[in-house]
Image (tube, rainbow, N blue to C red; front, side):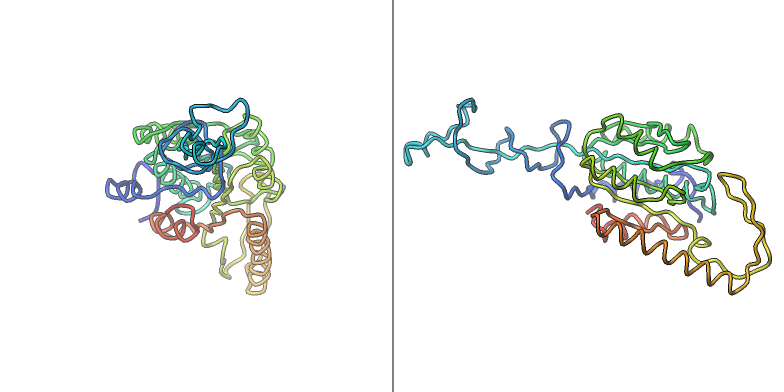
Length: 298
C-alpha cells in the first residue's frame, strides 16, 4: 500500500515498537535541560563518575572528606548529569519532493514523524523546520508523547510540495536562530544546484551531529528505456525533450552513480550519517531496519 501521510499509517502497534527505541547521540552534545539521557558533562545527579582536585571557588559541598582524611588532599566528587537531546528535523518541501507515488515528501514526512516520536517518547526535545524557498519555517517544537498530535496537525497545514529551494540558504536561516546543539536530520532529495557540501559543512561547524536522509524514487535511481519524452523541471518549469534510448539511460545511470558515490564518500569523510531512502521500500522497514543498521536509533 503506498505511503501517504503520517496520520494515516502510524498504527498503535507501530508506535509501541517505536517507543522501545531511542535516538543515538554519538557526540557529547550540550542539552538545554535535564532529561533522561546520560551526558559526559558533570552535574548533580546521584551516580558517581570521577574525582578531580579542588580549586578555589568550587562547591565545598562536593569535597570528599573521607579522601581528605586518607590523603590530606582536597578532591571533589563528580557525578553523571542526565540531559535531554534536541532532535532537529529539516524537511525539504520544495517542488521536486512532490514527485513519485508515494511522493518523496509524503515518504520523508512519515520517516520524520517516526523519528520525532522516538525522540518525544524518550523525553527529548524535537523541532521540525520546513525547507522551501530558501528561508526555513519552523513548523513544530515540542517534547513528550502528547506532542505527536500537534506535530501531525502542524505538518497537515501545508501538505503540498512547491517552490524552489537552496539548502545552503535554508541551513543558514536555521542556524541564524541559534538552535540548541543536537542531532540534525536533513530529509531531502538533494536536487539543488548549490550542492550538498556547503549546507552539511555548516551544520557540522555549528557543532551538530548530522544525518542525511536521501529520499529518491525508483525511477530516479534506475530509469528504463522507453519512448521519447519531455522532461519538465518541477521547480523552474524548464522543459527538455529527450529520447529514452538504451544509450541515454546508460549515460544517465553512470552520471547518477558518480553523483551518488560523491555524496556517500563526502558523508563518510565528514562523519555525516547517510541513509538512502527509496520510496518503494515500506517506510516502517526503513525505520526499523535501515536506520537501526546505520545506528541512528537503537
